[in-house]
Length: 289
Image 1 (cartoon, rainbow, N blue to C red):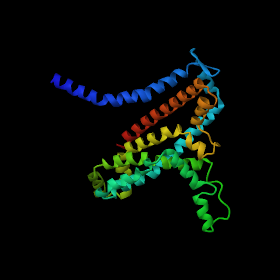
Image 2: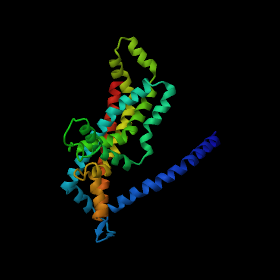
Image 3: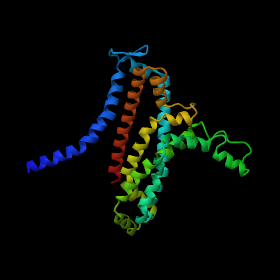
C-alpha cells in the first residue's frame, strides 16, 4: 500500500512539475524581483542596493497614490458589478434554457472575443464610441442628433463599458459551471412546495450559484485594478489609475524602487480586500444554508 501510494504521489508530482516550474519562473520570480526592488534605493539611472523603507513611507504619504488607488478600486468595483450583473442572465440562459446539444456552440460563441488581442478590442471600442465613431455616425444618419455626442468617450463610463465587455467571458463561464452543478430536483421540490419561480431562484438557485458568482467577482475585480491600457486609450489619459502611476514610475521616470513599492502596496490592498470578501461570502453562504 505504501509503495502504491508513493508511486501515485510520484506520478502526480511528475504531472504537475512542468506547470509548477513554469509558474515559478514566469510568476514567482518576477514578483520576488519587484518585492526586492521595493526595498532598495533609487540612483540616477541605477539602483542603489541598500535596504530602505523610505519607498513605502513615500507611497503612503503620496496624495496622488491615494487618489489613484481609490479611483482604481471604484472603477474596478463598478466594472465588476456591471459585468457580473450582465453575465448572470447569460449564464442562466445558457444553463437552463439552451438545449444540451447546443450548449457547446454557445460556449464557443462566448469565447470568440478571446480570438483577438485585448488591445484590438480596446481600439474597437474607441472606434465605436469615438466622436466620429459608429454610434455617432449612426445617430446622425438616422436624424436623431445634429452634432456628435462628445460624452461617449474619455470618461469613466466608457472605461467601464470597455472593461465589462473585455472581462464578460471570465464572468459568464464560472457562473455557468456553478449553475450546471445545481441538482434540478431541488428546483422542482421548491416549486412542488408552492414556491414561485422567483422565490425558488432567490432561495435555491442563487445561493447554490454563489461559488460561481464569487469566482467571477474575483476574476474580474483583481485584473481590472491593474489595467492601464484602457484608461490610456478609452480614458484619453484623463482618468489615470494606479497601474498608470506604476507604469510612469517604472518607464517614464525610471524610478523602479518607488514603482515597485507602489505595485507591492497595491497588490497588498487588493489581497486584503479579496480575503475580506471571501470571509464575508462564506458567512453569507452559512447563513443562507
